[in-house]
Image (tube, rainbow, N blue to C red):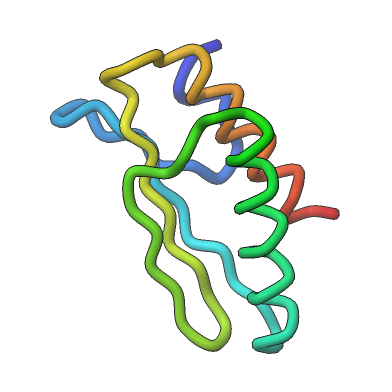
Length: 84
């Protein structure tokens, strides 16, 4: 899977990473997303390199240096959580 195929994620070559900002209309929806992200991470054993959030947004960075294919698949699953 090429980096450009992961809808909504920005690819950076150095260091190799994906980043994305997720916007929400309310804190309750932000919190729900974070809870589901935590559950996904526990199920997969994969975690974002960096997570920053506020009342209505979540910024994620995923480091691709380790297992790139697994983390690319993780990014797709995170996007699916956002759309759900």
